[in-house]
Amino acid sequence: MRQTLVLNASFEPLSTVTSRRAVVLVLQDKAVVEQAHPRLRVRASAVDLPLPRVIRLCRYVRVPFRRQAPWSRRGVLVRDRHRCAYCGRRATTVDHVVPRSHGGGDTWLNTVASCAEDNHRKADRTPEQAGMRLLRAPFIPSPADVLLLGLGAAEGAELPPGLRERELPAA
Image 1 (cartoon, helix red, strand yellow):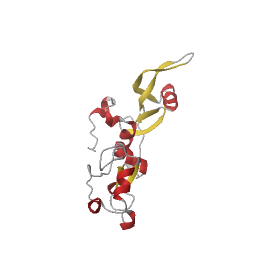
Image 2 (cartoon, one colour):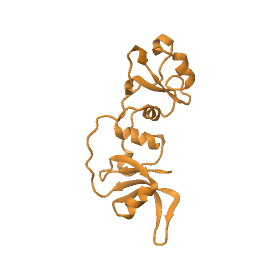
Image 3 (tube, rainbow, N blue to C red):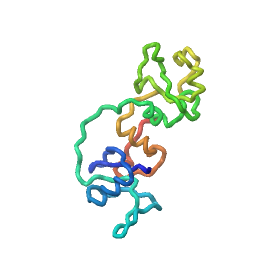
Image 4 (cartoon, rainbow, N blue to C red):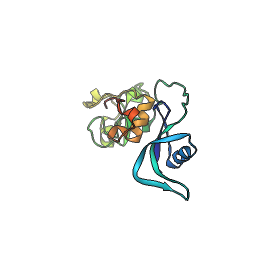
């Protein structure tokens, strides 16, 4: 199922919805299409519209302020773009920089994406003890950063005008 990015009226990223839900919002005049898939269209007897990739709500929706995105294993993999923090290969696991057995927790600054081989090699040690070096330091992404990275926007996908200037943290 395709995902569509939903922007607030102020071009602030809010969430993702299914393409079907995005089409319903556009047809109900609750949202406008900011960017569409180049070759995909939704056709019905009285409707012919491009399949939305990014929609913007017509009315501003007030959202409670969140200082940071909630931590999750999937979020760490997305933040690190599925690249191992030790060797740069494809990451499939999450590694704790300070192992949980040594008091390290499930936090953005203590977890990095890792390939299974490096995670096994590091084992129950810190990177210094294992003689391994982090290629990138872990960071705390904002909720908007996680959303944009999850959609692949940081990998060169075209963004709507209000988001083009937004800089994502260097990974």
